[in-house]
Length: 322
Image (cartoon, rainbow, N blue to C red; front, side):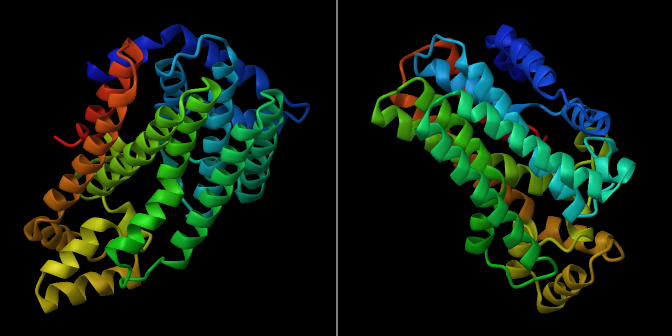
């Protein structure tokens, strides 16, 4: 119910953004349009464009360019998803087959490139060098985050600090760019601009940490992926890092072996160790800390329904774990 209240705050704008996205997906190459529409319409929450709409209006924006900016952010996000799924050889996302599973790797990568290009076309139309600067930098950082994650596949020695850098670059960066550019569009004060930028960063970290928890206690119906997918891909996430630090030597070695091997052979044992170690509670505490930091940053904004929606979003971020 809380989540619906957030979307209701910008319901009309959200509908107009969706219309703009469909319009700007148009291509003379049918397969480009088909794959792009498949991914865009695959049931995502559209959190990042939502952040643009809420942040810009919480900072007092009253024109229409926030719609185009929201579409740009969604195109950038969708492009990264297409490329991620190829890199991760994923065959399921949000409960549906990935584009690479349906059409192959090459078309998926190339349509991702198309979406990046279309996003930058629309970015130019906004005629704001500060916004272009933020988004071009964010795109580079996200790519670096992907490479960092790739380098650390099947690496059980990843530290908590190193992991926080990876998830900032890979996930939180686009949240940060969405709220930051919303503030720039509204020509917010420097204090409000910095607050909204940092709000996005900490909100994005909270969402990713909760996703880490859900990988060890969620289900495919609610998540659109299976429990243990991260482990199967050899990804060392915070629950595993904590469990290795707190478990016995035998438990630590079992998790290290499971990460290095990948797959799901050791999943039942790893799940038992993760849950017994307190890793779920620890990761959730970290997520709640990030969400609270994000909420506190909004204090410098004037009271409005858009600021309230941003506050509620910090609650929604951590309420996905029952």
